[in-house]
Amino acid sequence: MSGVKAGEDMGSRRTSSSSSMSVTDTETTNKPAKKTPNDFIFGKAIGEGSFSTVYLAKEVGVDKEVAVKVLDKRHIIKERKNEYVMREREVLMKLNHPFFIQLFCTFQDTERLYFVLSYARGGELLHYLNKLSSFDVACTQFYAAEIVIALQHLRNLGIIHRDLKPENILLNDEMHIQITDFGSAKILKDSSPEENSKGGDGTPASGGRRNSFVGTAQYVSPEVLTSKKASFSSDLWALGCIIYQFLAGLPPFRGGHEYQIFQKITKLEYDFPEGFPDSATDLVERLLVIDETNRLGCPELGGFGPLKDHEFFKGINWDSLKDGPAPKMMPYLPATSHNPELWSSERVGFDDKRLVEIITDTVMTADERKKELERQATGNKYHQFVEGNLILKQGLIDKRKGLFARRRMLLLTEGPHLYYVDPANMVLKGQIPWSKELRPEAKNFKIFFVHTPNRTYYLEDPESRTEEWVRKIREVWRRYYSSDNKPVERP
Image 1 (cartoon, rainbow, N blue to C red):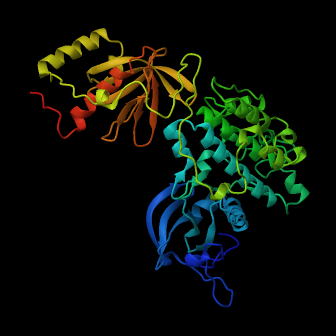
Image 2: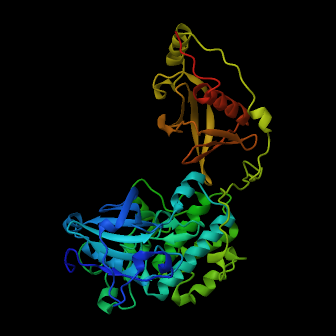
Image 3: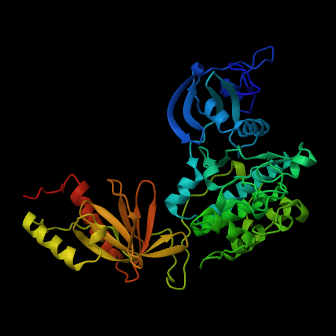
């Protein structure tokens, strides 16, 4: 890689955790100790990028886990990503804050570069958002506040992240945020006026074809799309998109492809779903502003003080946030006009005894099953979606993603399978994955959940038959997974 000789140490830094982390130690001459791959025991891969892989690792003789980002030199040079790699290293070396991933040291061999980073044991915030579909107000308030503090720290250092999104927000052992991925970042404080007038990707903004944008389509700000100068307010726009997604379950700007999303962004074309909190609505509307000099939190409007004082953050203790406990992650399930019951965190409607009652099934013979399948094939238009499996129960449900819902035909079949089909367009949209860990739960007469290891599916039956669904799913689960009721082989 240009600028750094093979085998030469690329830098080392001492952090507040250096007493328990020897990769931050330096020699008595103050010359950084050189590290090599042989100084680490590499474990499983915990992350994958376009030209890098992140491994869980331990330094030899040190009982502390770290994350080691391994970058392939040949691929970096081929794809001309040298600037991205060096920029990320430069930014990480400037950061020393609990809400960011920490860089302990970097080194290289003839084929690879190595970044030794703090390990965020909690994983991606996006994982929890996908599992729950949305976050409740308390959880959204907490994580949005931590992001605000992190952005304030970046601004003080003259840094714009430019790719802020839930995927790039990790969580530590205590479930506090650890922002990562600074390959797209920009350092403004020491930049020349010419550099600051460049477009979002570092190329001149005027003349010729529009530049490619830096960031992710759903979170990119309009000024980046129009190739104006880099702005601290671009991260405030991303914050508005993230808060919206936390509560609604989906980003505000969505489309079938990037161009469609960009059109909606530049036209500020988005809506708030029913049930979106009033204070959060006001905050998002003041962050998603086309003019970057009019976004709440920007220097032109008084900086971060007015943003922190917004009603949505009422009750936040900004000074002790990093030391306090993270709230329990709960989905945002407000009452709506078509479902006036409040979706509380407590189960209502049915008691456990009734839900787990033993149901005796009569097992079909091969001939009986064949006849049922023949009747199904000729008389049920959804037979085409179930891969030859016998349908045990079906019904229209609303499959929810946060505050959004789509009408689906849910098909419980042998196998076992839970297919869901778009009944308007007659298209199979997917399956709820079965495993021994799958668990149905009735929330009330209309709402039931299907919990899986990686996601909880929120389903609403307009006919108020959640008890039937839960009972039947439990019955099928027992037949395939219970040691007391193993599947019976048909003759």
